Image 1 (cartoon, rainbow, N blue to C red):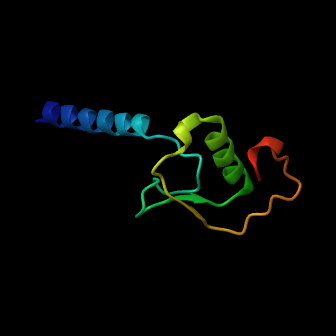
Image 2: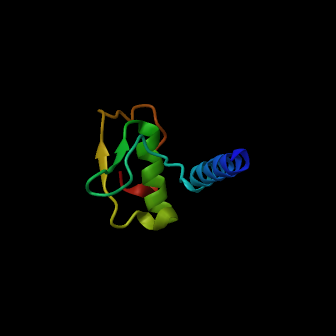
Length: 86
């Protein structure tokens, strides 16, 4: 019985580690990019990272993804790229 319990516990631990390893780190404040749960942009850094990813083609420009601003974002004092069309 103890051996079975140990195997079960080890299996659960292994599964939780695998799930954590497979989880993608999101550059956004929350959400998963769907219409029901859009990625949340809360900081200037997150907005600028999105802009850079869209303009340089990384993440394929996020086609079909949804975003929501969760705060007023000021870009004062931020270095903006002149070729981005801001």
